[in-house]
Length: 595
Image (cartoon, rainbow, N blue to C red; front, side, top):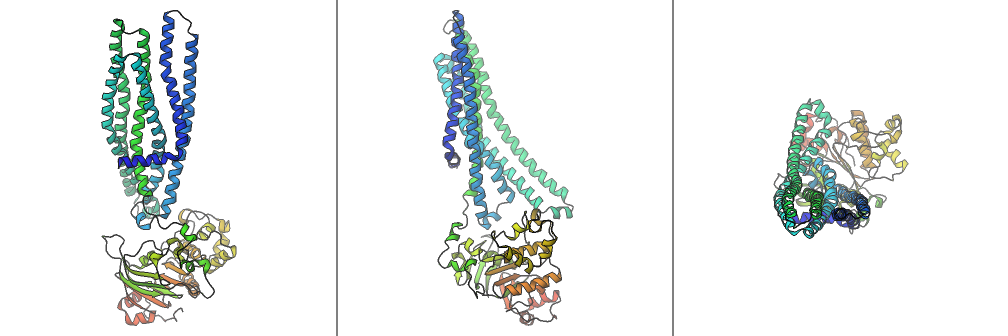
């Protein structure tokens, strides 16, 4: 797994290899300039010893210092620029993949954790795929070059230093797996903290209304402490690896000082050579620290790459390109292809079985019904009977586990999800409104909607007065999750957004639950009008919304136990009669069903 993750890390760096190679070359050139400085210093000392001019050595030393610094600076900038491009590429891949993942896969991952993978993990990837990779390469090249020159100056001292370096290097190698584990724990803890924050901010009103701020804060503090502990462990092992580089130089310096002094004393080594060797030891700090930092960063980066690729390797839904060229027969589901007289699509479920988890209970267990073309079909039943699940399957958020579900005689699993959804208008139970303007929300599914069409749906859902009262009309900001609107207004915006698509199938999941009685009555008339040309399915707990539906389906325990008009079900079905009695509808006057 480690090897495959490292290959994936290199894969992120590969598109930017030209810039990385250029940056590494410039950084290496800066390192080479540093390697040459002790040799020039040795020549300087030797010239002083024989009373020769040292201007050439001083000038060369100055050029090496300035030139090396400039080369290192340009190299660092080139690498940083490539690093930003690596982050951009990874984030573009993630943000392009996340909206296209299957709903079932997204259900298993907290949004906060996914956000952490797009933000924090890609930042770690940035360092690993560029700076750490270049640091490891340049540090290794510089270290090897320095050791070669030290061997050229004095083999005996070189072998002594090499023994110290090898001993510390072995200790560092033993520490690296611990750094990787600590980095993984730190990233997972950070993802858990992000998930907790997303949970809190997503239900902040409920938290405040429940006086639960202290409990939620305690939970977040616990997650923060978890991230802190994991970060401390990672920092601790990183410090061990970093300290080893300084320890190498200190032990090597003591070794060279003692052994080199003895060799100078017995005449087997010159003072100039000893000074040059000691200078190399001081310069050894840079490449050793660079190498240790690079390897440590790569260990953490490999963990980040794994987390990123856990998302990238999830199978997405059908490619959006399929919408442009749908499968044979799919074109009659595309809204633009609706013909005059089209009354909507025909829907048929036969013995449908569905579980949200393979080892979980059956939410639908042999559900069968027919709806459309055209007309209003209502779905009622106790909570948990599978009503909303029917809509999720029609939208292909999930695929059925058994039986068959068809639209216009074609199995849902044969449709490309994007092509299918273009023909369906869907109003969710909580009627989400996105941050942005009212216009952006209304035209979310039809960005190029004509002004006349927008005015039409606004009038249909009785929102014209609201728009006229807003300071900037349709271009007024509605706030985060539509907080500037009331619950009923958000529901009407969601309904208008669905109607603007001119769908062949309209799914309304508790779409009038937050409306007052007058507005609900008006929207019942709108739904009845839409049902003349569209197949409308309505999930409702308030039976007053659907008493005049052409057909009402009664769900219980994942099955359709009864179907008929309001009057027929009052007469023939005990469960429906109990539901109606609790809402005082059993004795209500019966309207004619919607055709």
